[in-house]
Image (cartoon, rainbow, N blue to C red; front, top):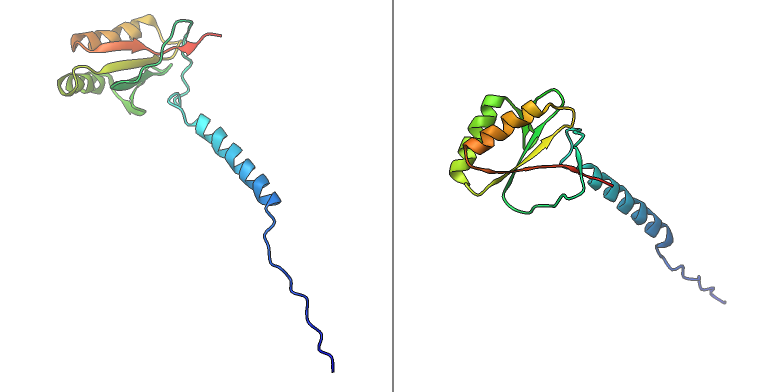
Length: 132
């Protein structure tokens, strides 16, 4: 009596479809990471040709078109803004304040914000969008 041997089936994972899926996941995460930016408040910054990037102790202050103040993305009042800058001048006197002001906000509001910064002898830069 002759016994037939079964052919062994080799188990395997097809990698061609996995590479496509990984590529799409990578694209998705790259697109999402560019959306999570500092400009999440929707400010339209004025444009500048001579702007530079800064990498030091920075406190981000934003003022939107409704003259609402935000420090590091958290909405505050003008009085809170003054007290935060006073505290920052005590704890970190070399800090730089990065002002992000919507271009529709009046110059008078910019002067009010800068006056408080100057009162506590902090450095200030005004954030702009890169002019193309």
